[in-house]
Amino acid sequence: MPSLLIVRLKHEVDAEWFVRVIYDWRLARVVDEEDQIIDELFWNRVSTKNLVDRLSDLQSGRITPEARTLMERFPDAEKDSLGALSYSEWPELSDEETKKFIEASTRLAKRGVAESSGDIDRRMDMLVSANNEIRSSWTTLEARCIEWTGLFLSDLDLDEQRKEIPEIVSRSKSINDVANEFNVSEPKHQPSEEEWNTINTQAQLVVNLANQITSSEDTIRTIANDYLPSLSALMGPISAAKLVVLAGGRERLARMPSGSLQVLGANAAMSAHRKGAPPPKHGAILFSMPAVSRSPRWVRGKVARYLAGKASIAVRIDHFDGEKLTKEQVSEIHKEAESIKMKFPKPPKRK
Amino acid sequence: MGRRKPIQLAWGVRKEGRTLWTRNAVKGVSVRDERRKKDSRIEWRQWEPQKSKVAACLLKTKLDPSRLIPKVGSTCLYLGASSGTTVSHIHDHVCGSGNHHNGQIISVEISPRMMRDLSKLCELRPGLIPVLGDARKPTVISPYLRDKVDWIHQDISVADQTKSFLNISEIFLKDDGIGLLSLKAASERWIEGGDDSRFKSAKELIESNSKVELIENVDISHFEGQHRVFVIRKNCY
Image (cartoon, rainbow over all chains, first blue to last red; front, side):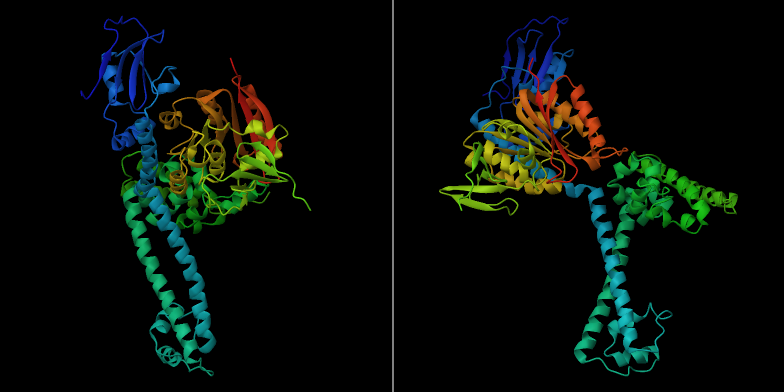
């Protein structure tokens, strides 16, 4: 059996004619204005594996090998990928072909699901969201750990020594050990042994979470520096990653107007604005930049607007493969932001 | 205390009082923990209007609901299938157990997370075909179709959804075919006024299209806040 069955129905074709190459995954046909078939090519060795690739190619607008061959024979022909939809007497699929087609469509869908793990946007979303969650649980647990220790050790300075408390509680054998380590008086009422064990484990949890935050932030930094080099250089890798996650992907951030980027993460303020409140000046991420948060409030909006513009250029560079922002350019941007601050040393007069 | 007699809306779809039921094509299995019940040897699965906009639309329509349901054994296009709750009920009706009606439902979904559940459902239910891709792009859908479809439902929430619905309907919907478009007020561009004005642009867009006719505008906010279903019919030439 020949690998390609070629049925030539008409040999001489006038180049002036308007012809179309109609194709689907199995068949490509050249037809003229009167829907007469001039030439056709079947795909004969239908295998489910190749069919998966074909369907995927067709979906992304590519052409089948049969259609390509026909296009070479009829270079002036118009392409039409609708197959049976465009031509009323399109041959039916055999049972065998139908079976393979159904099998292939399920496989293609599953392949797409599996391929989504290759999407850096999705991976960054998981990393950043996990990091946010770990950080928020750390904040709660850490506060509890401090208060808990403070309940027993009344002389302990909870502000000055806050940072050391979880670490020391986690590696001590008893509450008295903790007291000795900090050089404060032992508690008036001792916790029971079980109670101390709970305090101790809780403190260990705090320490472990702190380590976890450090390592997951390192991971985010590595990925962001690689995936968003310019934006990371401008805003710091963590903020860059957070912006992309808030926008729902790098492409979406790159296509976003800088005004939207400026207020990313200011959800509550934005919805208040819709109800009549003044517009937000900046979102959570831009505010975390010192140039914005350390400025007097009357220039924050101006600085945020300026930086949002530059950030939006930076992410476009990253997404559309531009030339990475250099260190000089980044420091120039920061200098410019600083000079905006200098221009407005005094708050505007109230009207 | 006699139960109200069920009204048959179409093959495998019936209404009992205010509840809808479809004849379960996969016996003993619920898709989203919905209620099942036996009536002699047939198992029925409750079609919850809170979870399915099509069900809500069937309960709220002022027309004959059976007009809005696809025909048994027809080809349907479902854009924005999500994890397949509604799709499974359409499948109960269009394909039936083991696809003995020989119907086909092409269900398009863009999110891999949703497709994960949907593709599992498709393996249980022959006739249901999963397509992972952007439902606004005709090339994503066309390789799966061998003929125009009889019924379309679109439930995606993106900008320009009305425009893409009309575009897809023009290309893929048969003459006289029925199209359902689910719209959410919140995903329309924000403008002054109530929900009505937000749906106005969608309505105008549909009415200005000569290839389709708007036959009903169903308010389903009773079941699903701020939602509307537009029912269209493709004009014949």
